[in-house]
Length: 322
Image 1 (cartoon, rainbow, N blue to C red):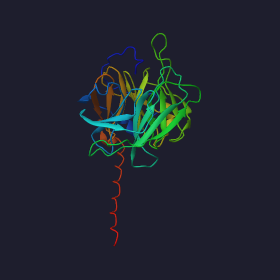
Image 2: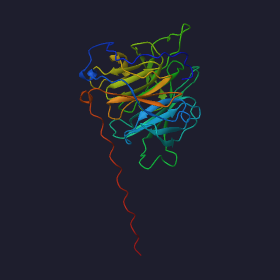
Image 3: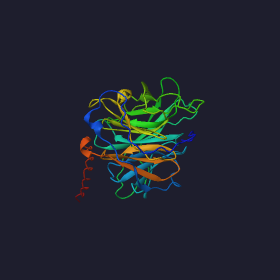
Image 4: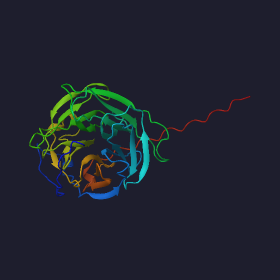
C-alpha cells in the first residue's frame, strides 16, 4: 500500500521448494506463466487493493479501491470492461485493504463478498471491521440501490496490527494475515501473524501463530479455496496446500508452501482464484493490468462448488373476488 518503499522486478519462475511435510496429490498442480488478459480503468480505480472472482456472475471480477471513503465494490469483466459500482451499507472505511469471496455460511452454496477495513499503517486502531453481503446478480447490471451488508467489529488480543490480507475459509470464517513492517535495513521485521474470528461475529480475534513465507516479504493479499491458500507479497506469490483434507485454515503455519508464478507488478496487492479453481488473477495498484495464470492440470484440483440455486419464483398475487 502507501508504505511501499522499493520494489524489484523478478523473473517469472516456478519454484518447487517445499517448506514442510509431504504434500498431497493435489499439490502436484502447477501454474503457467501469467498472461495479461485485460486492463481496467486505473484512473477510476487507482488503488486496487482487493480482488475477487465472481461465482454467480462468471467472467466478472470484483475490485476494492483502497480509499478512506470506501463504501462500494467495483465490478469489471475479466477483460477490464467496467460493469459498474456496487454500493453497500457501510460507514466510511478508515483503510479498506482486502476483498474476499467465500461461502456466506458453512455449507452454503451462495457466495458473499467480504470487505475488510483492516489497514493500520501506524498500528493505533482499537478495532477493525469487516462487512459481508451476498454476491448480487449482475445479469441486468449493478443493483440500482444500496445492498444491505452485515458488519462485524474485531479486536486483536495483544494490541493493534497493520494488515492487508483477509482470508475467508470455506465456512465463511474471516482470518487475517498481518503485514509486518520493515526493519532499519529494509528487511521485513518477521513472519506474518495469523488471526481468526469466532465465526462471522464481533469480538476478539484468536492468535494462531506466525506463518513462514518461502521468501521474506510484506503480505499484501490472500485467498483460500478448498484446501489451498494463496498469499502474496509485493514481489512474490505463494500457494499453501493443506496436508490432509479438511485441515483447518488456522493451522496454515504447518501447511507446505511453494512459490508460484506472478507478473512483475509495480505494487501488487491483490490475488484471487478463478471461480473454477484452475488458476488465479492478480492486479496491482496504480496500473489497470489484469494478469491470469492458468493451472496446468484441472483434473488434479477438487471440483468447483455448484452454483447457488436460482431463487424461487414469486407467486402471483391472487385477484380479490368481488
